[in-house]
Amino acid sequence: MVEKEIQLSIVIPTIGNRGILKPTLSKLGFAIKGLSVEVIVVDDSPKSIVSHGDVKPFRLLRSKGIGAGGARNMGYKSANAELLLFLDDDIWVTKENLERTLELHSLSKAIAYNFFWNYPKELMSELPKSKFGNYILKYKLYSNEHRVGALESEFTK
Image (cartoon, rainbow, N blue to C red; front, side):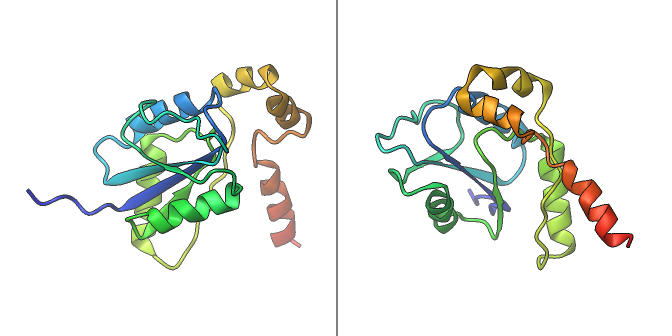
């Protein structure tokens, strides 16, 4: 049997089994169905606490405290696809998001994309339950829509 070439490698660094990782991987599991995608989770916690049995399919690497950038680089070096998508462990994507990424990449392989994003309602309700979530709320880091206004005003001068 000939295996299908992987079109997209999704790299997710994490610092342990934070409560949000499991639903993120669960949603990602549904989003990748039928697509030629691999998911690489890089556990950067010093004690390697992410369980390989959380949600499949994904490949688990352990970077043991080298930081988010180092964990992303480890995932990149392990990736099998030409196209990379870096996600944080609290970013939820849909099948449509991934299909659009693949479509745009097929139009030009020389362009990098950074999509606009918002936390979904389910995730917003989880934010007050953690110190980091409260930080996100305080500094309004649950969306990057604020960049749209800055970009529009920059280009319309």
